[in-house]
Length: 326
Image (cartoon, rainbow, N blue to C red; front, side, top):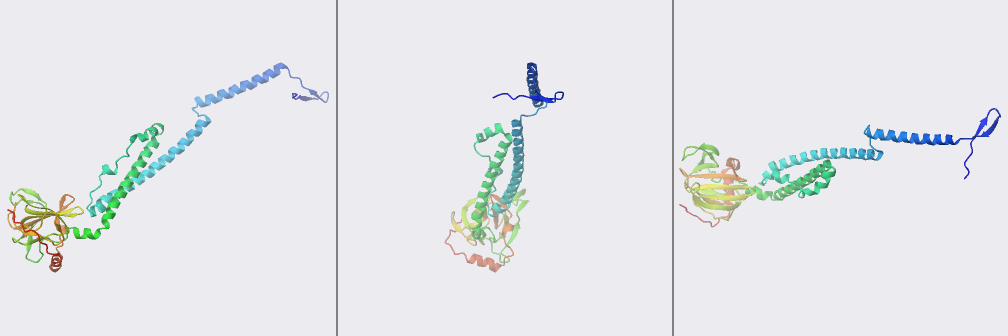
């Protein structure tokens, strides 16, 4: 293809004339273009190094990383709020729901146990530590939610047995409430030991009564032990389930045997003064989740005698054992 020719207007001759460019003119233009290119390149390199500016692609990647980092921080704040909510639910679960149904508390170690397989985060730790930390938090939150869900399942299963719980929890006086039958002779808590005279913690209440006064179970359950020991003398422990047990001590005789199912109002034995005792009385304990609690909170002393009598008389008479221990 023929190179285009360039013309210029000559004002003297009033005509267009063909321009003639010398070889040096072409060389000058070429050198000017090369010089300008080098100047632009140098300026760009100086701007990216001396001013610490990124290449366009690097800049775009950096901006994208900043956006994702912001999203991770927002997610971390949301996980903080979710964790606080779960902790509050866990506290209510332990202090209220599980306590009501006699379930032991879930330990913090069990609630906050990590996810097995720590190597799963190694690659993330190398590439993006903040993302790895968020992944750990999310996995832990999911595990805590699963543990809490299972805890609620336990409580729900027991809630369906509410009627059974109501008749199992100790709720009546173990002796007849007919006026003049017994008196409270020693309360729950710290007291002066009647035998050794020193201060001691009294795990139950003492009900002074006459020898041979019948003793009754205060809730449905199973006889866990029926034996003699030096401290409690002839004693019976009834396991009511749901974390509750009751102890009846210093009995003159025992009328039940180990493994026997009893109902509220079942005859267990008779008042006596066996073991470490200074007179005829019943030592009565309520034990909740392994710890003695004040039995006064589980004895409805405002219940009319006729109502108490009805509860006892409704229990079928069982052919139990009348054991007379030493």
